[in-house]
Length: 126
Image 1 (tube, rainbow, N blue to C red):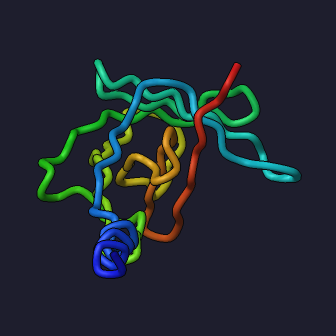
Image 2 (cartoon, rainbow, N blue to C red):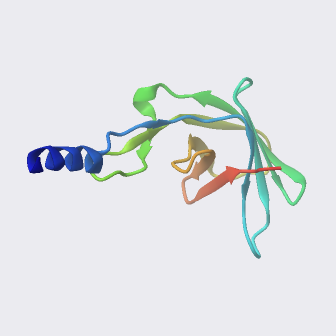
Image 3 (tube, one colour):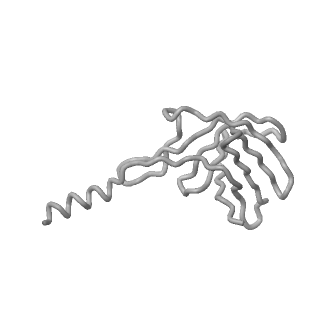
């Protein structure tokens, strides 16, 4: 019995890595004194639009990367999970360093990555 319990516990603690996917929707970042930013993600057209305080600030075209190039993260006890990742190309708007978007470990959500910053967005519930 104790051997079965030990095997079950080991399986529970090792929690095989999973995969998180980018979803369409509106995602929110910013709290308190930070400006509220929204990311409108459209997976059918591979596009992302960022608005800050109600004004569009940037639009991106997304290129889904092959699964072998997806970011890893979402650490479990003995493995990490993969998150779908897009390379982003700015189409219009302000210049910034955002280059990638990945699904969030905290589903549903997305994370925008720049050279000098990481901006998490959580799904906006209307």
